[in-house]
Image (cartoon, rainbow, N blue to C red; front, side):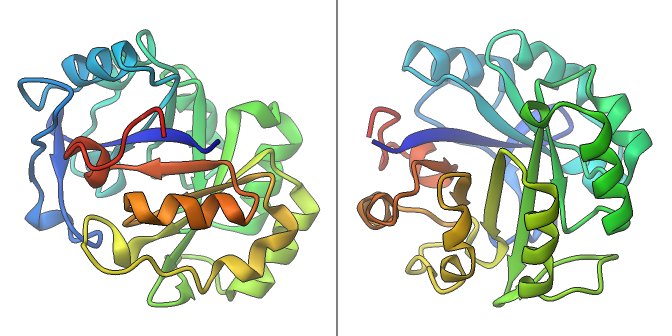
Amino acid sequence: MIKIIPVLDLINNQAVSGKSGNRSTYTPLDTIYAPSSDPVQIANGLKINGASEIYIADLDLIEKQGHNIHTVKTVNNILPVMLDAGIKDFDSFKFYLDFAYKLIVATETINSVNEIKKIFNTFPKERIVVSVDIKEGELYSTNLDLNILEFKEVLKQINPNEIILLNISDVGTNKDFDNSFIKYFEDFKDKLIIAGGIKNEDLTYIESLGINKALVGTSLHKGLINLKY
């Protein structure tokens, strides 16, 4: 059975929704789990309905427009948070450990492979999640000059416990789920968390691949996917 991990994107201490990573178009989240877009209310609603952890992207931190870390810390007392804080290096990873149980090391924002290795050589693996960010079929990164296959070799070296495959192009859309990139990571299937535009009908396929975790935002908050899939 696939474990559904709910997704929240935060701007100005509110949960928001948007499409394809175009953060300028995000609006307050309308969710079946709470009467408002307050992240704390939503976290409580998700916990009551069976969620055991939650993924939060602090879009203000990622975009260098402020932060939501105190809200994240409050949510972390309700559900263990897997936090994407736009981590760039070892020092920022160390800092944000005080605010969430797990931290995302994402290809989109990390400065270098050396910083990734330094993090893995210092901190427990159970607190680190690598996010392989993919956009339009290519590895998406501000700083890493690597393709998907080259980054796969990095993953073999660091051997993380959990790896998110995030197809940014499909976030918040109604497009058919793009599974073409999954084939590159079959060696890691027991570690994979699939993300990006996942709908209810995609879960059976993902499960058939031997993958047992998925990050779900839009479809979950609309009630189209049940936490107890």
